[in-house]
Image (cartoon, rainbow, N blue to C red; front, side):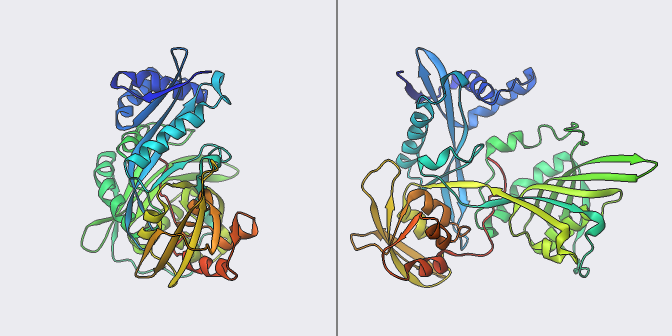
Length: 408
């Protein structure tokens, strides 16, 4: 099958969206479809065409990624990828991903990233899972605090318009202090609160609460939905689902979590896509009350390893030569990395390697979430110089754990 890959033209938005919904097996309402068509203008898209028909699409977003140490790096965000069910397993996705990654390289992006709908798909293109996100569930009756933390700020009920106005600036402040955070894209911002005023899955419309610090500035934002069941035998049993919780300070984060867990009539609180190392969890007197399930979040595909590794800081002062292998079998590249808490330098090298690893493994370790030693035990990293695995594990480790923040 001959497949042509070309950039999406301005008049192609409706066809683009139709393929995405067909790939997902969904049929949107006319209003939702029209809104999605308008939003696609913010995506740098590609079409896959066979026999004159559009059979697959994919897009890129221009985003920024926070690296360990706080520096921000441009990242090519892969999004809206779909192939018609009639044309899967014929190499269409491979052609689309090749076009996207080539374009990202030409634009000078050091790394590409995505959130995978299906985990097995993207490793073959050099993507590695770089952070873990948590689904959290807490029964409020078990969620007493060890001791009341100090509170100098205040909470404030907000409406949708206020939340929309406050979110961009707050999100940027969170990005500045949290390793692994990805900037909020215009594309997703338009969709973020589309259903805020509607009931979804039996849960009521989204409500918003702000946290203001002692000076009155917003340093936290909570969006949540609730559902209340009340019978004579059980009494009130309410569910509170956290839609989003952003905080640029520990005080704001703790205050918003307390608001959720101490909300009248709510007996269970759930939240998705939370950090794997949420600090508030250790504030509970009963640590078993905080139940979380981890899954992969952000996947990273290093395109320019030297630029990516130079941008972050490291847990110890050291130097290593890394041999990096591409999934297509191209000749491996070697890089000399010298880094520590004050910064790093990474340049091409012809020296003998200390470690040999695939580019997907490099994507998994570059934010500090996956210990290199673990990948070595799994056979994904080869130790050439004795002791290099232990050194690299200490060097790449970072705290807090990375958190990508939100699906893009």
